[in-house]
Image (cartoon, rainbow over all chains, first blue to last red; front, top):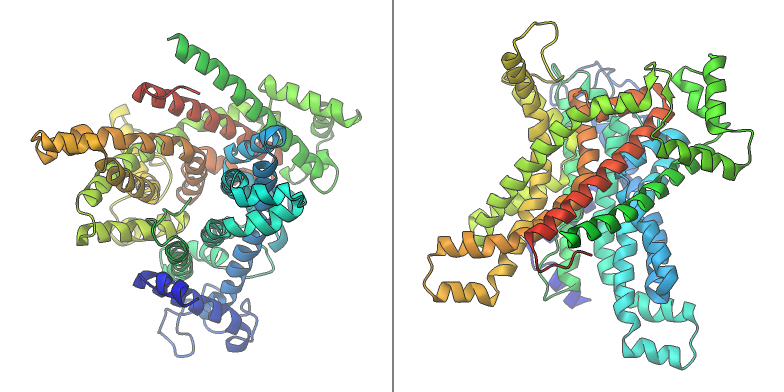
Length: 281
Length: 326
C-alpha cells in the first residue's frame, strides 16, 4: 500500500487532484449542514454580486437564491449522477466484455456488433432522445448516460480477457475443472481491474459533464438544483450578471479536472513503467 | 482500384447493418416509452388535438398489427427515407433535417480542420521540447480543455468577446433584417461563425495535441529516424519529412473516431449560439417534445457518422499503402 501511494504521489498534480476531489466530496457531504434551507428558496435581494453583501459570499441569482447554497447542493447531484452512471456502465461493460472475451466465437461476434452499433450512435443526441422519452429524472439521466458509456468499457475488458484467457494460470484452472463463472470472477477479472479503475475515474468525469449539459438544456431532474441548471438559469442574464454563469461552470471545471488528475495518478500507480494515458472522450 | 472497390463494398454492407441496428433501437424506444406510442409521438408536439394527424401516425406505424409487422413497416419506411411528418413545423422530417445539415457541416468541417491543424502544430512543438516549460504549458491547456464543459466555454467566450469587448455577435448566423450583397453576406456569416467555431476548436484541439505529441515521440524512436539523422539531414528535414508523415496516421484514425462526438458537440454549440443547424433543430424538438423529429435527427446523424467513418477509412488506405484494407 505504501508503494502504491508513493507511485501515485510521484506527480504533485495527482495529489492536487485528490485534494480537490476531497474538497468537492466534503462540500457535497456538508451541504445540508452548512445550508440547511432549501436552495430553491429566496434568501436575499436578487442580483447581489459576489462579495457585495456579507452572508452571500457568491452572491444571489435572478430570484434572490443563494448561489453558494446552490453550489453545495449541486455538488451532491453531480457526484451522485457521475458515480451511479459509472457503476451501472461498469456492470454492463464488464459483463459484456468478459463474456465476449472469454467465450469468443459467435458470442463475441454478436456482442461486438452490438457494441459497434452503440458506439456509432452520436452519444449526446442519443442521451437527449432517451431522457426526452423517459422523462427527465435522476434515474433516467443515470441510465441514459450509462447506456452510452458501457461500450468503451466492454471493449477494454474484452481485450484484457482475450489476452489473459490464453495465459497458463487460466488454462490450468480450466484444466483442473474449475467452472467458467469461477475462472472469470476469481482468476481473470481481478487481473484486469487496474485499467478498469483508471477508466472508471474518467467515466465519472465524463458523466458529470453530460449531466451538466443535460440540465443546461432543461433536461435535468426538475426537483433538484444542479450546476448545469444554474448555468442554464444564469444564461438569461449573461449581459448584466455573468457571474451566475461563471461560478457553477468553475465548479464543474474543478471537479472534472480533479477526476482526470486522479485518473492519471491511478494510472501511474498501477503501471509504474508506462507513460500516462490520454483521457478518453 | 479493385482492392478499394472490394473494400468499399464490404464496408457498405457493414454500414447498412449498423444503421439497421440503430433503426431497430429507435423502434424499440418508441414502444418502450411509457404510454401509447402514437400519443407519445403526437402528444406534446401539439398534434394530439388533430385527429387527422393522429390517424396518419397510427397508419404509419401500423399499430393495429402484430409487433413484428410494425417493425418491418418501420424499417421499410427508413429504407425509403420516409421519416414522417413534423406537426410542429408543418413539413416532412427529412426535408426539415436536410435543410439544416449544411449549417452544421460548415461548423463541423471548419472546426475539425482548425482543431487538427492547431493540434498538429502544438503536438509537434511539445514533442520537440519534451519536458520543457513549453511542453508543460501545452499539457496544462490540454488538461483544462478536457475539464471545461463545451457549452460553458461558449458562454464565457460570449461574455468576453460580445458583452465586454463587443467585437463579435453573440448568436445567430447572420444579421437579421438587413439587405446585403452576397459578398457582405458571406462576411457577415463568417463573423457570426467565429465564436461557435472557436468554441468547438478549442475543445477538440486538446485531443489532437496529446495524440500528435505521443505519436511523434513514438515514431522518433524508430530506426529510420536514426538513419535519417545519421546521414546528416537537418533536424527540420527529419521532423517534417520523416517523422511527421508517419506520425499522422493515428491522427486520421482519431478524426473517424471523433465524428460522432463532434456532431454531439456541434449540437451543443448550436444551442448556445442559436446557429441554425441540426443542433438548434434538436433543441426546438426538445422544447416542443417533438419525438418523431428527434428520432429522425438521431437516425440521420448516425448515418452521417457511418458515412464519415467510411471516408476516413478510405483516406487511411490511401495514405498508407502498407495497410491491408480490411
